[in-house]
Image (cartoon, rainbow, N blue to C red; front, side):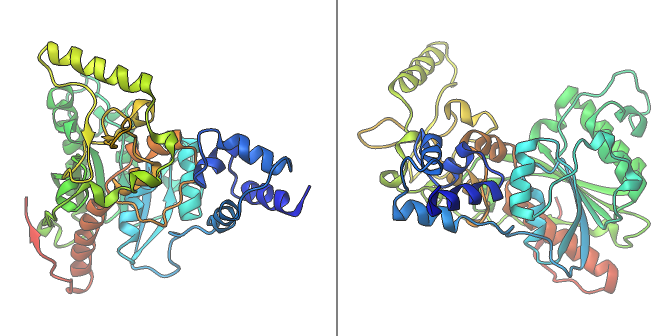
Length: 394
């Protein structure tokens, strides 16, 4: 094996990446995994530009917890760490525990934070989790049993929210922040949300909630989510003075997150067959009087639709117009930007998994703004001094 072939193979193995993941990560074409295999078998050699991309691919986690921090947190249903990242960006938070069962998300999390999250949270006891100041979670939305009558803690058994509640009950963090889809409030005719709120109040927390649009925080995506924040009444004396952040409403433009079409690999341009299928389905929906079908955007569009975990299938919710060619999907890096992830966030998985991960993740700037408000209140509680950031009580 030549020195270059050995360099490529050992680098990929150190990163714990498959040939397909490695090929997508360094920007190779549709059959890039075959190219990587040929390089490692000395059947061909990379260009100087390709070799540079390989050697420069980061191996050090860019968002590892600082050694010194003011407050500790845990990250439940962590996904790829978008919520943790928003808190990390305050410069004052150390993470002491995380949980995520999906193996691909675990790989992305490890690449960026230097830790492999624990697995199934339903099998982890509260006493085995370190003490912490702040709990964050983006739990899945499930309907609760109609059999319960208390509409509180006991009624959550059998749901994944129960695991959030039992950890809050067992560890008593000073504060928590939960994120979910906006339809949580209407899920199961409103009963799900009622049980969640009653449970958190029953645990003796002062609880606040609101919905925010990503587009109101400078991100060109029409993504609306609900955020629930709570403070322990026994540990936080000013628990009733929390306010959510003001929305900056910075003007947005899709072109701000796009690469020039001329530089984007052709594998992201959708095929003639898929494009014809998209147009046919949209015409059929239009004939029925509804607006379903693909959505086309340009660099000058103010924002896109919500990116979802199914984006990898056909990209129909967000297609980028290209002059003289079929539309294209977002690249994984563009998808990351559409959620407010920084440029140095590492994508160590295949394109398919990356689309799922970013579609399931959170808008980082929204989380960061809420995190600053939580810390401001905790600072006031601890020493009577905060930053007095602009606030609005919603």
